[in-house]
Length: 385
Image (cartoon, rainbow, N blue to C red; front, top):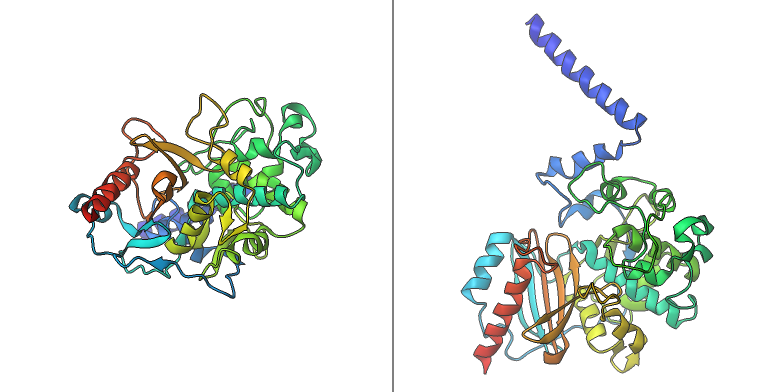
């Protein structure tokens, strides 16, 4: 048994050495990553992981505005192709909202209309909307206001001309490695570390801002920090007062923070449900107007859903862009296939939340499952005619 004791002591010593090295090289956030992700049987961040982080509350409306339910709701069943896809990649919620009413609604894996799940990067669209609101209120001058007005650390070097609009349109030129699977990437560190502000303010400009599109989560985080500076409010409270309450959200939402009462992880991680996420689709579908009141400036909304760069037609300001059968499509998009898809021409909103997606075989921004959601939704709508 001596050899067994030596083996156990050797393994224990190795583990202690690894932990010490992680702290020395400031990679101790990996301990939390392993505990939250791998100990829960996952390989990446997952829908229910908000339960393992600190969260700020986005307060709901005191006067809820439930969605209207179409008299034909769920009379047309999901196509076999759609149902097979839901099962294959773990869809938990699928909504079709037609002409401002829920026309189809399905839940899976014990989820219900009230179940919360992680928005992941759909939150970026909400942060961009907050920028529009701050401009509308005169708290931020315009899309052209310099980031250095809020954080002087960006006055030097290539970042000196970086604007809040550059952040919203993914054109900052900052040094950021957008990798979700590399445990040593800045994206992973941002997700699990406890000092997000220092991480973001330590970024350097490596390209001229405002010249081209490059998707970086750090852009949205820095944008959120600018909005907080400009408004004097925590972003979770600002979103609650500016959107969650005016849009009549029926449930409070949770926004992951880097520490207790800390900074929200603005580039991701709002835990809410399909019906309340869909409200942002409706707001943008209606050019910033909600029940007759202009919540967001219509010109800002239109700019948000229009490509900034000719060579990057798939992104505007916080919203992804596409076409389907010649029709304009814009959408919120999150890791693992979280979607709020808007087709204005048909007054249509599609929401999908779930555990996995199917990457595009052609290398497109739209995942292959995204295309199926659109194709099969239109097949279902055709059956009603």
